[in-house]
Image 1 (tube, rainbow, N blue to C red):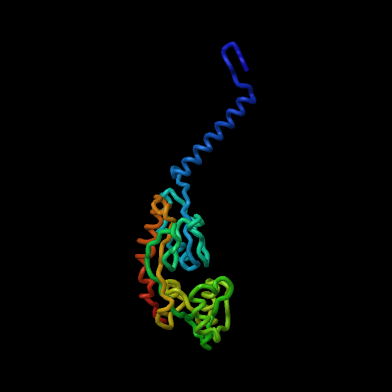
Image 2 (image 1 turned 120 degrees about the horizontal axis):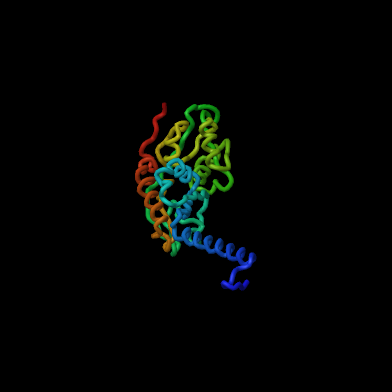
Length: 242
């Protein structure tokens, strides 16, 4: 609209300008988020069920509210495709072989047979608790089926259920030592199983490993979580039976 003092926006024009300013502000906010200026960067960490639960119990060693980042745990029995950015970091039991992935070994994990504290029901009879469903594909479940499959009396379709069954006296089962030795309801009944000992690798995309947020979480995962708790993961401190 033209006036003697110059041009002035119409009401519709003022509304359009206001909306354009809102869009510009939103784009600036998005840019700051992408650049990490407002602390909204997300680092997605993939791991198996037991390792994810361990990270959850020790999240204060991995993440601080003033880091300016967010953590997202992605729990899966299988591997998430880090090469396609399904996760930023992965904790795996073997060296990555994909050409676009980088890895560093951060420890070793021992496995052993555990029972509940009370020798009742299936434990008293020397029976085992097995695994069915997707969890049956993990190495410890396959070992149990191969060596004691004829003595499995009860099964659970996830590893957490198996632990509850063992703690309740339904039978024996195999757990990582960092799981069994840290659960006061369980006790180790034999030495760690040599063929189930695995390496532990921290995996990231080759191009993303130097991103500040990814590097920060990766270094803490390696130094604080896995190195400081290394003896627990290696099965060096079994809990004695009461």
